[in-house]
Length: 192
Ligand SMILES: Cc1cc2nc3c(=O)[nH]c(=O)nc-3n(C[C@H](O)[C@H](O)[C@H](O)COP(=O)(O)O)c2cc1C
Image (cartoon, rainbow, N blue to C red):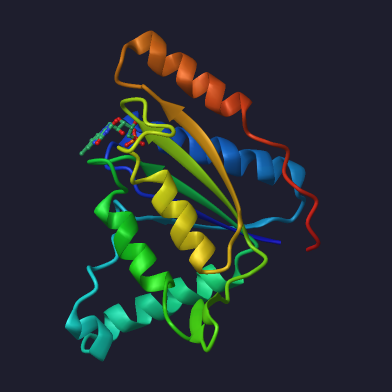
């Protein structure tokens, strides 16, 4: 079984979502012997913004990285995504990665009956962190966006491990992180 671990926080060792995504991955590693884990840190190793040049394949190094990102994504059974809320949405580094995995003909296609997701059968676990409280609020363009875009790619098994209100106080932050870690569900015994 293959797990792909993505982090996108710009806050380094102080990051909530890095802490949570690592906890999720550790759970899977403990539960699934021989689990193969690949990691991309989108802060340390960002994907370039999608431009006309990207679509034209003007830069060979960028095109090779984009191809590798797609291959890595398609091969993964489980994807763990560290996704902080920045300015009510996701970090632009994570959006740049999504721009490389949401590709017509690879992960979705249009048919006479409308769009069809092609990246079926994956499980995605999103480690979500936000300074305020946004669950169910109109200010949440982070989690609903991820749910929608992943669903568009055919991924309906999406779980959120969420710490929110982390900016309210140190106590609130500690409780929110502990609560999020407690909420991590047992890894599924998927076939290898
Ligand atoms: C650039 C930036 C923008 C942020 N924007 C928001 C926001 O719009 N709403 C919010 O509730 N918290 C916001 N926060 C707080 C983060 O969501 C919170 O610190 C969360 O823990 C970030 O995850 P991380 O620690 O893994 O980076 C922002 C933080 C940063 C650094």
